[in-house]
Image 1 (tube, rainbow, N blue to C red):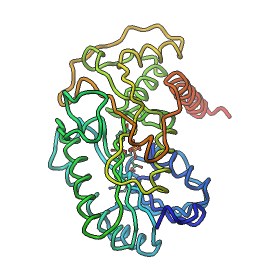
Image 2 (image 1 turned 180 degrees about the vertical axis):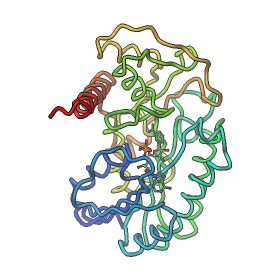
Image 3 (image 1 turned 30 degrees about the vertical axis):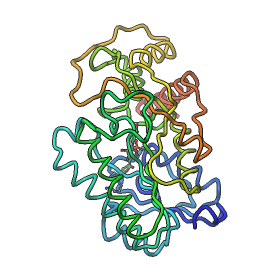
Length: 326
Ligand SMILES: NC(=O)c1ccc[n+]([C@@H]2O[C@H](COP(=O)([O-])OP(=O)(O)OC[C@H]3O[C@@H](n4cnc5c(N)ncnc54)[C@H](O)[C@@H]3O)[C@@H](O)[C@H]2O)c1
């Protein structure tokens, strides 16, 4: 069993390990001397090189190649972070989203079980699963009521995983993350307000907010999320866990803080609110505190400062490269 295995012996397969949350998590696993196999199709890597000792296969997580790699690797635990498309993309084409996310995920679960994994931990979404109107901070016992295709797919992944776990006698855990932010996040896509705002500020563009900016989210720093993933991989908790701070922060507050960090003065572009996005998100992390002995440690001030510093440094390096500077 994973929890009984010494961390140095544990074998962990991480799908999506080349991504934003994945690279931070893999680094912690490697620091514990776990044996790590990353399965990533490199459709959206964050660009950070993985530690040398990690075995990497470039493949879709539901492919025959991935199943073969898993069977050869014989993981104790599979941590599933691979995923395509966010709330808006899923809303535009839910059928396609299900093929890319839910179908891929179920294929991966099946391959993990056939490879003999004793435990599966999967990335879910506390921001979309509870829907609108939950008494906040939301607790895991609340009835899921996703409003978006993305949230419905994430909830379906949880249900599939639990059913397969019961059927095959393996332990399963869904990690319901809040809004994860921090270094290495992609600021060029349509999700991730912290990264997008950093990116825009560095491009000398005005911050952009959808709606009036009063919508709130539970922003959680990526290193805290990686620590939660590590505790989940090594632990025995099952079911669903909120991975958040229990604090609500408005998008306007985030933008204001990043403007202050950057020393820029700029008006904000307010665009029409996006469909399928809930007004308020706040996750009660008590269950994760208790079962994983985990708590978000990084304050918003520290997290946003570190994130801004990372974007600024990377931007300077990219500009220097463009200009041919050392
Ligand atoms: N970032 C957040 O705020 C947040 C919030 C809630 C849940 N999540 C979930 O956490 C997980 C990780 O998110 P992230 O922000 O690190 O995303 P990311 O896009 O940075 O990383 C995902 C990684 O998975 C890879 N990938 C995508 N589809 C794949 C497939 N079919 N097979 C193999 N590899 C594939 C990509 O190349 C990428 O490296 C996802 O499941 C995401 O839905 C993220």
